[in-house]
Length: 334
Image (cartoon, rainbow, N blue to C red; front, side):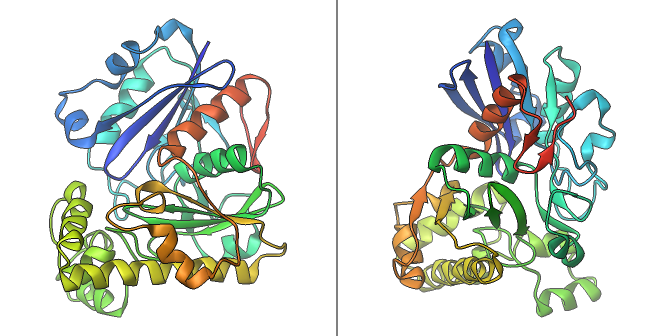
């Protein structure tokens, strides 16, 4: 038996394969450019690694996931589980083609919801304050964090192109702070006053602002989303002043967000879990070391795989297949 998890990421689509004992058989990533252009088929790549008949269940994440609030079979989902194709998270084609491939296959697949104002599993205060808190892969990331660490009360930080921090209490997701609200990632970040003015004056769309509001804004980098992080890290290694300032500012905003969630938590926090390409980064800088400048060793920091979104999704698939009906407070329709 094989279980598969799919992480619909900003720069690529990652798959993880697990066996019946929960061992990771393989993890692989497809670039958005290749899937969009039809150069790569997700189903063909999966079939190279296992027989499609051996797949008992796949868990899929896609876009904002704000059109559903339960883990739901794909054939029961309308509009790919999202309310709108426009704005933040705008469809670019790569993930959409992969979704369509899976939808047309005979692989049994469930879709994870995002965390949003219609999520009954979340704290009502978070839902009242924010229409959207996190996209679906954050659920699978948290699930992997729980599996890897055993912690029940923690802040899970998925840090990469986006920075999204999730509050977990008593083993359930209470709420989160999305990339457009709080901390910067490499690429995306909060839309501030200057950007609001640009939007009102028609200089840029909101999505264009959001996609340049991360550390790249400070470094003055304007490239395709897939290349921005690479450009920034190259400039950082070369010691360019703006790039160094960009990275240090990004870390500061992440620390602020973590402390904000700690400050409103009902329980004592047992630890901080870091993941994503930034959260697990050791070169060209040690992110954990930079973050600890602010945390001052007051919290236990654990780092899990940068592929935690795909691995966690596969773990969810395995556990649902074996009878689990609730994931981190989210009901399962299966």
